[in-house]
Image (cartoon, rainbow, N blue to C red; front, side, top):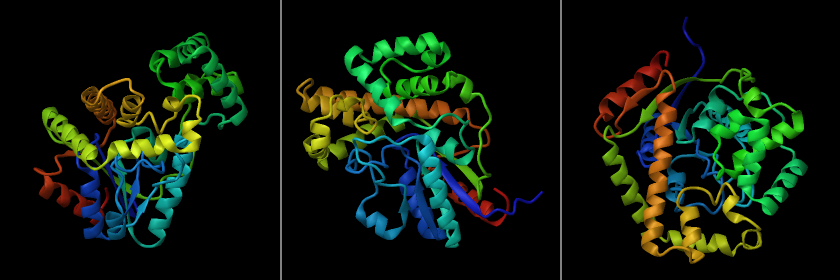
Length: 319
């Protein structure tokens, strides 16, 4: 049966794989607009280290889902799904092609398939959990989680405050472990477009690692440490009791730069740790991509002709 929905393209892949440049080129060629699917790009002030599109790129092609929150705020996958769906609807209403581009798997899943129903965020409960963490430390709260939801605790590391907080919040609000909530089928309306899902990655992991290192060095040369200094000077971050627990500052590169500016590491160690953290992120992204059915894999350079042919065919027929 023919899918009558309008087309959209999803460019998924590990960090530094070339998704952004490809999205920009496809958007210019096909009359598209880019909807970012990246958990770092939603934060204002995270520009160089998050490889956020610059003013010239935004002038060439409309971008959505950038600069939505301040770096001391949080932003959930559920919030992203609502905001990004609205952005996609607006792009379609203008008769343009939505190009979803990014590396945050949870955001893609939330947008394309929906999330399992569970209690919404509750500021008072979150504040109580954060106060406990400040007094006892996140490993102690991870131990609390292990008593009420051992499945979630096994999946969430003791150094992941955002996910520990959410899991405890859900349990305290509902009395039901977040693991049980997550097994329930997703809710929400059907995605408004038929989506061609493409995984963008070089075939050799060593090539990606070289790109990660080169990109981080380019960020340093572009003033990344000055960007982090500017973040540290913001009153809301300067006075925050645990800035390294904030999702924005936990983004790869930012945490390592922050610790370096705290005097905990020298410049060489900071660079080494940031590159290693980015490699680990890429590994997690590959794991998520390999578990996703229906993906078509392309090297953005070597397979460019075949990739563009697949896109053109999807725009004419069913994705």
